[in-house]
Length: 388
Ligand SMILES: *[C@@H]1O[C@H](CO)[C@@H](O)[C@H](O)[C@H]1NC(C)=O
Ligand SMILES: *[C@@H]1O[C@H](CO)[C@@H](O)[C@H](O)[C@H]1NC(C)=O
Ligand SMILES: *[C@@H]1O[C@H](CO)[C@@H](O)[C@H](O)[C@H]1NC(C)=O
Ligand SMILES: *[C@@H]1O[C@H](CO)[C@@H](O)[C@H](O)[C@H]1NC(C)=O
Image (cartoon, rainbow, N blue to C red; front, side, top):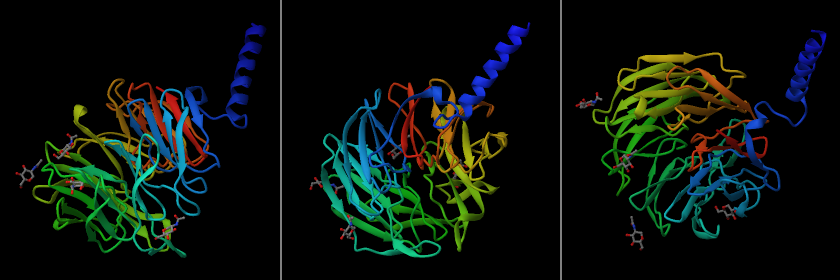
């Protein structure tokens, strides 16, 4: 009996020691591999998976893009995008052999995905953006959308641009009243895109000309990627009311289901706002809120199906959850470095993982092609592959 108690006590002690030992993190046994950029740099953007490869990008001082073998983490190539403030806060998109990314220098670049060499790059004349206390160069914060041979992307310089995706020719620009940090999505018609600006409007822009076809007034700023359901034509997105003096303070937000045909909100949820995943197979939207809680709702009525308010170590979901269809799970991450696996029907927490820094993933974490791994980067200056 005594022996068993001692053994149990030892086991508990060992677990406690493991849990608090420096360099060890909660859920560490899930790590398939982690990659540290050299020089060390935070990873903000979401990775991109294509076949057997995964790409990720870092902020300064590395300003690097990496192509890895997804299964092993072996580096295929890496390259820097420049010096100084030249990191990547937007997320990589790889289409037709070209890697599209924007930088903190407001450069819109396309690289050869096989080699990392620059195929084309466009940098508008430098412009200053107000950042609560000082001016700094405007950044490309919105992620690229490739559609119909074109690349669409917003920028902090209050402009949405359309390039020929292959050649980089600037086909049109459309100006908004404030920064365009939202990431565009395609209209079900295929002839328009939707993108929100921090001037309080969600815009529908013509693919060929950039002309404003309609606009919908939201509550202020929007920096996430909306979710479009082609079948119903509903656009799910959110906005927040920023504090003009403190970019990390917000005065609430709204989650919308916008009927893109009538340009009227089907429903709206007042609160703190959040980032939305639409899961067609389960007929639900899942919202990771800006206060670290999450909920699921019916896409048509907005009726809440479940809500979780007690996730461990809660903090803002900066990017949306992703759906693992194979296992019937959803994965999301937060600005306190927590990564969660939830049961989408109930919101039950299945497991979690703690990184050593924020996990912003603006487009959400990514699954490997074989659905065995999930990828994300962290401000703890590592890129992670976790076993599912
Ligand atoms: C940033 O962009 C400007 C042009 O707007 C260019 O002159 C400058 O060299 C770029 N800086 C870096 C570090 O690439
Ligand atoms: C992009 O440029 C190529 C080469 O000039 C051209 O064939 C293609 O039609 C252009 N695409 C668009 C959308 O303008
Ligand atoms: C939705 O429709 C657009 C435009 O036709 C298309 O580009 C996009 O791939 C479709 N999305 C899905 C998930 O089918
Ligand atoms: C969206 O609006 C159109 C036009 O008013 C209407 O026909 C359609 O049923 C609406 N869609 C939904 C999902 O309510």
